[in-house]
Image (tube, rainbow, N blue to C red; front, side, top):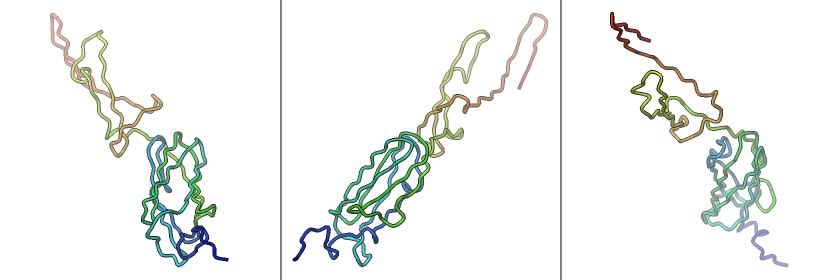
Length: 179
């Protein structure tokens, strides 16, 4: 009996044991940021497939519910994207027709995006002028080490330091003070 179902044809289909997954999204991720990796479908001889159509399943378990999107590039590769909502420990499993790829599952620690002082910017009038007993304000635009916008989740992570220069005039003399 000849089985024509592609799932069982070793000559035409990818095999889990020879297929591979690679990319930064298997090594590291930042909470609330898109992470990516690539799956390469390989045949029984270990050669990369030149067509798509295989059924890869990606499951991600961890600190938050994560849904992975698998895109068939129709050239033997599959692009995977996901976004973890919270930082913490995660596990990524990649299966082909229910069979795990080598090295699957991968362990991953999703990190929280942290502001990098070198990349943050200050805006506002209070940076260039101030008046006694008058409330002044400025804004901080937070960015991570790569310049991507991020958030300061805990106010304690922000340390402000400033120097104060003033000139006080009195009727009898001029006082000068510096930092």
